[in-house]
View 1: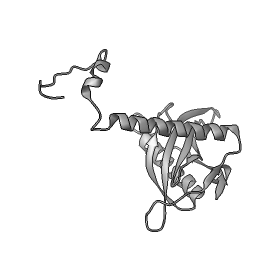
View 2: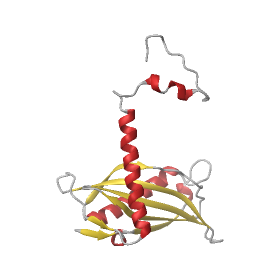
View 3: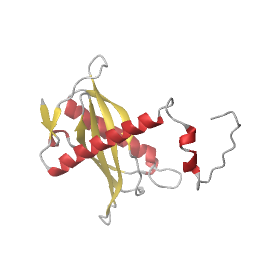
Length: 183
């Protein structure tokens, strides 16, 4: 079975309250991450028709702060499907209610895994890509997955050699004082 991306696209909006703020008066990043996880779950579950769990979160960059009193809108869509997993792309924007000014605050990618009633991973429907933006998002997700696998292989504990990377530390604010026998 295949489904269009539009069939599981989700959007939510919420007014940011003082109770959502951190000590500097901005909306707490943890609160935004919680909302992002909820919309990722809803989008993935809508696509798969099953309960889904968060496997990983990629690229959480807080670009612009969100103020108390702003309306935050999150848009989520399935960017990629594997056999049992999906990458959900999420865009976060905030709107100043009085001026109508909108700012991009965050974009992130949540990998969600579909689960059956027994908690085992289960197959998800394929994707119907019906415009160039959807094809680009799928391809970008593939490249992020490929890069992540290469990085994991390179940094695997049994393969990683300190000696191969020590030269990289020159120019950084670090002082290395290792005992002679330690590597």
